[in-house]
Image 1: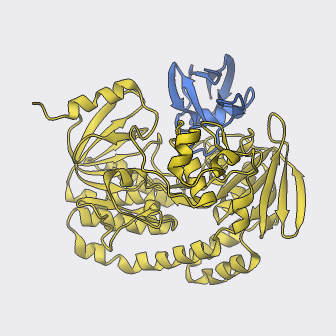
Image 2 (image 1 turned 90 degrees about the horizontal axis):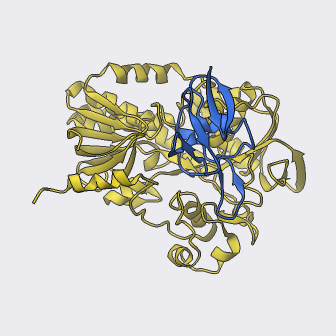
Image 3 (image 1 turned 45 degrees about the horizontal axis):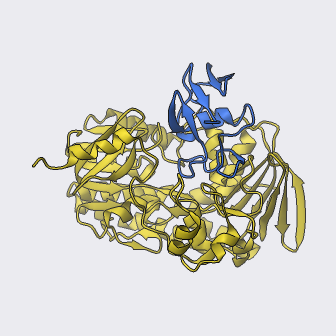
Length: 419
Length: 78
């Protein structure tokens, strides 16, 4: 077992970093855990082709300067190991960590939905492509189609262009009216308005979505519905993501109440479970500014600084309003649910096709009969897709939460109180 | 720059490059073979989908969450 910590923070993105820095001056022992090798989360992901904003580099430097913040990088949560104890694993070892309080800052993942050809090499998520480019993927001279929904499409397009790719189409499924209403309202958040202007793309089309990715061994072209027309475009890459869904799995396993597919929190960022808080995208998708202020509030409350936390409520409210507008503007068109054909794979780990799933009436029945969701990703991709496609409630994740070494599981014995 | 081996083919990449980014730019650009026999490549880029699980120096790792090191041996067919 590792030495117990007063405060454990899971996730070192904007929310987790802000929470750690807000709690640190109290002097308590803090551990911040992330499954990536470097802090920053998705939005501030570092790499050979990434340009970090000043705020991100400053916060990283501050984290490093705080001697009471211990970073557990490239570490993941494997299982619960008893009250306020978690089984963790890094590249080398497994260990149990005991905590006094916990702040969940587990972020969000992309909603990836099946369409014909989506398993072809060359097809990635929209944020996925951006992450891979930041991590050093060369895309210079490639033709790229970006599709799905939300502002992330433009951010991904900008990263691809900056690295020498030609973005031949950005297909936004939302209608022009919804997107323009959203854009017109951005004056209330000037930094967002400036960002929108900076990211604007001539290839951008609304009411547009991917019908099919074409190719034999790898992606060669994409068929896109643009309004009432169908376009076929040759390309080397397709990056498709339908906005974000909160990563609630660990919160759910701990017993935190989940509401609207997110970890439910009160005005103090406290979850339904005592001493357990949540902040950032895992409490609902809202962007990095909201994540930062929520993280600060959670960190302050965890060290008993309620008054200081309360001062941040108006700022949080301002970004919550932004998040609400964002989610309204980019609501999914029902047509997106019908992109998969009978023979389209939905579960990529166990190779289960749409028609096999469609025979069933619930996730559990489908899983028991087809093995969907029983592979390495534990249904993180296909159960999330099935929720959108069939309205099935996603399952509780069972431990181990991700593929784990046997030696790590053996550490659970150490966590048991000695008899 | 540093040098690693992907399925026996040597590749030079910039410091800080992820294994996912490296393997997508060499060989067949893929990371694994699915249960149905299809070759697959990294998808989510952020540690969720597990499509990029590969063997690195004999241990199964997610390529998108591993940074290339000099002399690393990466296998995508195991």
